Length: 58
Length: 244
Image 1 (cartoon, rainbow over the protein chains, first blue to last red):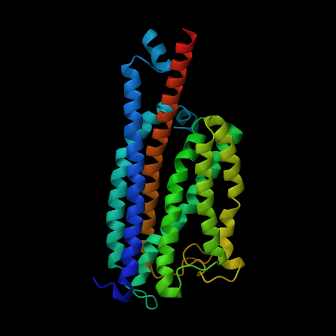
Image 2: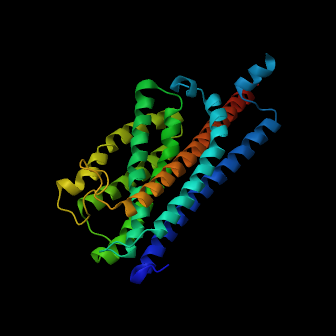
Image 3: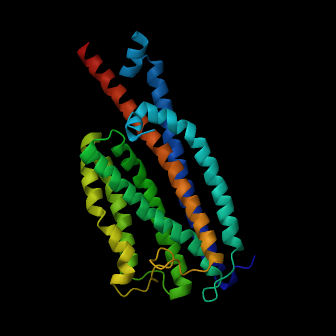
């Protein structure tokens, strides 16, 4: 594939977009992992959501 | 399925969990098809191969405005209907919208240098998109500055609705003012003024970007619901510990 005399600009545009999208995906995935871990820790200590306690009581 | 059904965060979590893997697969497929079409598209007779930047720049620009429109609808949901997921949707969308706007600005700058001879010019289109990016950062900062989520939601909703004034300014800036940026060539009253060999790859990439937004937004909304559950559990535990 020949990208012509301005290949650097085309590659830089696609490369920078890929970096932005990958950073965004990583940030959301890491946030999810951290929240899941924190919720699991609280539940392991016996701290539950009110709705979960109500379900268990019922 | 109605909006009332989706107003229940537990039901939303259950439905979104099932939908997410399908959306993620569709996003990957759409990007594979879109990028393939984009890099097989012919060069433009004037711009040469740099027209390939359009397949990235234009969908990112569309999404940058679409996400703010979604946030504006969510802001109405917060202020008028008090929908329990409205502020969750708005807060989750803001960083994604900021990322699309950044891609739009950077790719536009890299397209402008070989075509216009400059990376940046303070014309109405470029400046109004930069203002949109700064507004995204402002809303994100506001969400982080106010600790109580419901107070932050109301303040962010008002800021979002005020910022929505910028959307028509961005769209019609190229018609209202004399700009270096070209006028619209796809969303026109008399139909697209772009050759089908370039239009189809552009639409395929736009679909891929839209699906990417959908997937990331659902995931970020799920994160935000988990964050609020976590906060609620911590507050309830702290309250019961203090009362004991």
